[in-house]
Amino acid sequence: MKYIYETHLHTVEASACASMPGEEYPAYMKSLGYSGIIVTDHFFTGNSCVPNNLPWEARIEKYCSGYEHAKAAAGDDFTVLFGIEYNFQGDEYLLYGVTEEWLLDNPDIEEFSREQVYESVHSIGGIMIQAHPYRERGYLSAIHLTPAVSDGIEVYNAANPDWQNALGYEYALERGFLMSGGSDIHNYSLDNMGGMSFPYPIHTIEEYVKAFMAGDGTPVFRRDVHDNSTIFRPVTEDQTLMVTKEKSTLEVIWH
Image 1 (spheres, helix red, strand yellow):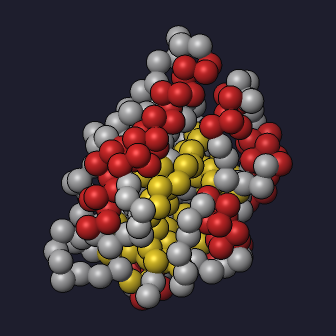
Image 2 (tube, helix red, strand yellow; image 1 turned 30 degrees about the horizontal axis):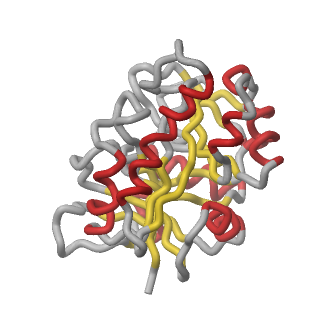
């Protein structure tokens, strides 16, 4: 049996672009075949809906509420873990292994450089994965690639076109990075979804970090999730997710 985990998920409680409450995710994701989720709401440096005029403790409590609501709604057979999506100049990172306590202890984190975030995450045993590295949007002016502060690359992001995912796959393959997959889900409407498949169950974020870094996870995708006849498949089974003749239309900046 394969255990599939959503690694990139947003709730309405903390992400301005989301429209689905945390408490609704466990039942929905379980119905699609997931064994668990990692809630990765946009942090304050990104598309957050958390008011910035609150005391730090109140901001963190609000930020973590989507995760807390999802965890409270999950049954004993569904895993809900905590993560963060952190933005710099349009380049975003999925932080795994961090905690609410870590956020409370770093009230100046919004001023951290990429290297400082990376070092702080590593200091508590966490990892930093660059999300959708070749994503193009109208509000982005460049692509920032950061091999020195990345423990892995999100090579499949269900919210992105196949060719942008393929560019990320080619980048990860060329640099020898561990590969991640996720949906970047914001609500029920997403038709294609992704995640990470493991041969054993994951119960804690520490277990996820260890399993990922051991290379035990496989990035997977599923087309038309609302069609019950479809299944999750490894990214390596679809050439359009691995190879593309298209090139980025944005300037690529290396850090």
